[in-house]
Length: 109
Image 1 (cartoon, rainbow, N blue to C red):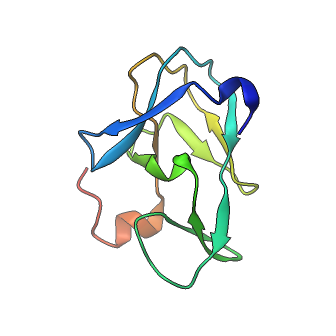
Image 2 (cartoon, rainbow, N blue to C red; image 1 turned 120 degrees about the horizontal axis):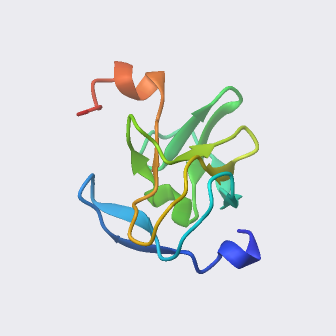
């Protein structure tokens, strides 16, 4: 994780699902929040990302970023996580899980 962003987030109960990752201070749009720590996996689970190179398990606190059709962060191919909009203290970090999520019927939005 980028050192200056290390203490900008907190894991706590989410109104979306289980636990979520929340901003503890203002973060500007476009800011690099850090990079996901991942490990290859063949198992499906709540912290699995689907990539063109195969599935990976997110093993860092970014695994608590929940789904939203109106996301405020994005994962990129290099597993970087970037703020799409300015985040305010208390905002839950959300990402659009993509077509797979929508087609799986898991999307409740």
